[in-house]
Length: 213
Image (cartoon, rainbow, N blue to C red; front, side):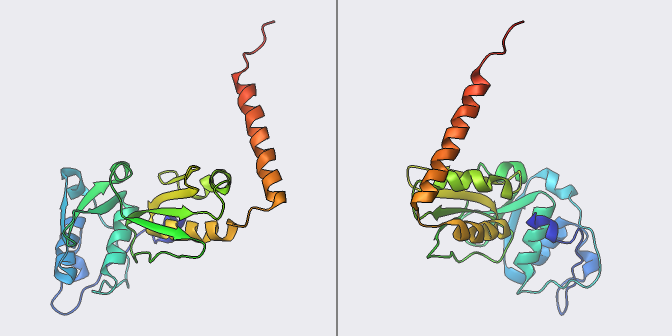
């Protein structure tokens, strides 16, 4: 999956008046450096204090790439940041908590690509399909294309597919859905109808009690 693209360890170098990589030995220290670079403030629970960063040479953290690298490190460690509301303060929460919180929402369609943030922050994308009947069909076709801790679900009433995940995963799913979002032709209608019939038969088979000898 996309998060595997990220190297298992990142080393962070700072120049000028900022801290050198050797001082960025844990996330707590890095949040202080993030404040120096971006003015962003972070709050977190006790468990976050023990999170560590692996290091390998030649990755530079600058004002321009600080958010991308820092949020990628958080994601790899099983954390994410959630905006508090003032634009500069963030809560750092565990992966298991993030899906239950209110996430930034982007609206999308085949004709409209959202302005995705250049971070690994979690977001929710509401993708409007060309035909409402396609929503559930595409959900079933691509639900296994997102990591287990992400979400992909269809809202058949509005003809919308909702994707909740780290931004790079949502961005990839946008391209996937856009490529599959075709006009509802007669052949496609028959395919959807046949699939629905097969699923109905499978559900009926599951409900049948095993025969006694």
